[in-house]
Image (cartoon, rainbow, N blue to C red; front, side, top):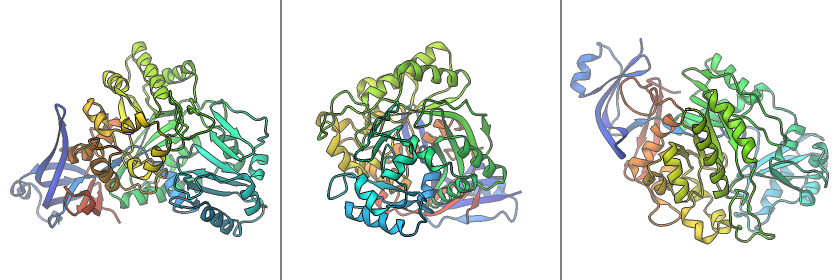
Length: 513
């Protein structure tokens, strides 16, 4: 029987009572069999704990519930840390091309050169990689370079040929700019299928690498969105073998990129380490790449563009209703106002048909007052990414219409509207997936003055917010008795997020290796 007594620091329980966010101090915690057995005065818990119970003196550090990243592509984070060419943070197209050329020299003819992370707003040339340049740099290899947002992709001629893409090819919910070798939204799926599905062993490697990295950042629970059947099989295999380093919730994708096929609803799976009872839809594109569906044109784009809606509304409603009736939570990627209008109409119709679980909107990036009010009425959960405010600011300044700039990822407005908010990183869309970095951005780096949130709100959204979103607030997200003993211990002043760093992560009451 495992036991642990923790004391000697700031033990803080993020709470929300009647709309007020607080950090409730606790003197000590007693853990037994992986769960919080008691909280209270140290003297009382010393009497409660059997003789010989291990003790952890925090030495003045801060203990919180383990961070919950409510939207992070775990396997892709792991892929970038193991096998994928990492192009994030590069500031010149010349450096992108240099890295592509360097990787090409290591590959055999015909092997795919796969990279991710370029961002034209950060590049000195302010332009995207070109098909002609990639043809010269990798003449014997198909090339796929995914933009940091994962909604735009640069490819060379060999990749287009293998994918069967010609100047006449079209795809629902996507665009193909053949001469430039640039693919938008669902067109990516044509190339991904041509690459061949990764093996289960590869998926398992990437998942474990991603989980272990998140764990080092104080994350004990996370949601991996857009999981397809082969990736789901890898997750279940890891869970069966007891090899998942953190607790993972899955959003199972219904409609993959590049086609009109629809995956059947998955078999539900709920264990202590792995949960799959939610599904995922994409309603539009990304804001940083100017493909989110908006009702006025993006700045600086010629010809004018209003982004991309991926679904006809009736088709989205029919697919969502099937999942809703089966008791699945639904997470829909929606950023632009046109996408938010569509998704909120669909969600409202679902609840008019029959009661169901609370659904979520991923990103919720350009929500206006009408979207906030309707989401509050329907009980919809917002899942934004605070770190976007710092890492993608240059993109928003470049593309977002001026009169909408201050409503772009306005976190404070979400809280003031009374929404349940769950914070996340959307890694590896961003380079910095650390929850501490998200805290800094949410509290101190809003796009517009006055849009910042409080420490209490931010910590709740990074702990209990994610638990509510996953439908598992009875097990995770707080320091209440009965919750899993999953903690993060921080060095530094909790009121100064720039001073904070993760000292240790604890799962099931045991320090992780």
